[in-house]
Length: 474
Image (cartoon, rainbow, N blue to C red; front, side, top):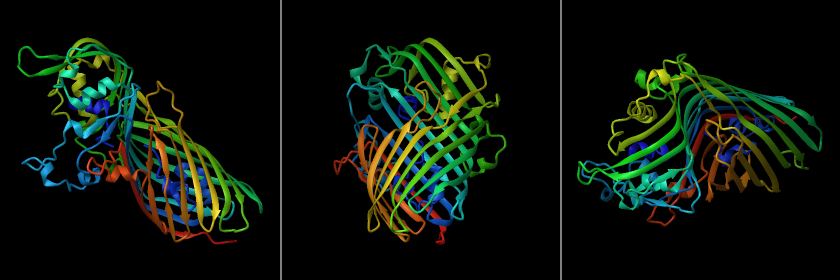
């Protein structure tokens, strides 16, 4: 059931700014500004040019990945031949996704974050200025019931679910892909031999490339046997009350998401965003290291407004007695294609289309504490808390808390963040050599499989290439 897998899991496609092993470091350059724009004034670099960096991330609190091969093997096309079909297609059985059942609603998030050429310049001892470019794509499901996700995992052919009425919870699905250009200014408000207080703000111009959402306000369904065709089953939707919105720009133009969208004036979405934060340092006797740094920020304030009626669809759905089979969506490509099939099957016409909707950024509270333990060792704690309203049409920052040690010099940095996210603990590791870095916030997610019994519930990887020069001492 391809459409259910998309709308209820959405983890096979791609927003957030985690990169926890690098972002909290004073050697993080432009990467630190996404965690807190005031950190630009704390940068160890006088000049930092991000050439290219990126992050791919996946997490959920229901499915455990327990295939006999790792996600890394799957991504790199190195799955052993014994797990492939005759045509070379990788074999993926339903039991390769184990279930974590506790009766609570579930969520899942997938994102990719591509950071293009970006510049950070220190302005003497008084502050810093930054210019950033970024392309972000995210897909997310919130508040999905275990019963519906069980159907997604097992498919329509599982007899356990036949003819059992289900009045499902009010789940929501959101996707958004957009480009942004940001201008950051950080200034030092207070500085002496003992302390430093800095304020930073980023203003972002946003171009929405494609977006979609399904906000389910009420769904009743059953799985039934097709009496006209033996061994065939379908999903009977007895009642559906929902809002559906999506864009068609990429599909109509036959395009895929690429860097060229930065310069495409026909993108259907426009908006503004902002980050604002404070940073406080308690200085030590060593001028190269602070004793303590505290930071607090609100990140990703803002909304993208999709308003070009020729490419934007928004429907309020009130329907009963609808039937879907596992093959209905086989030819649909991407979120736009799946939404288009739903539009056709539910007889949604232009007369029902309002032609506009808003999609919010993943607004979050960011709190960071970095303690210098001596000899280049630090202990870092980070809290990212989603502050978007429950009913908002928006991508959300998955709330997390992370604590981990870091060993750092100007030449090399190693960090091991230990993070609690989506009701599970994950361990990461990152390595920085000068301004170049490679890391993951979920190491076991990259190497875990049923073979080594790790069975992760997500994965994460990031890397970056930059040029930089250290700030001159006064």
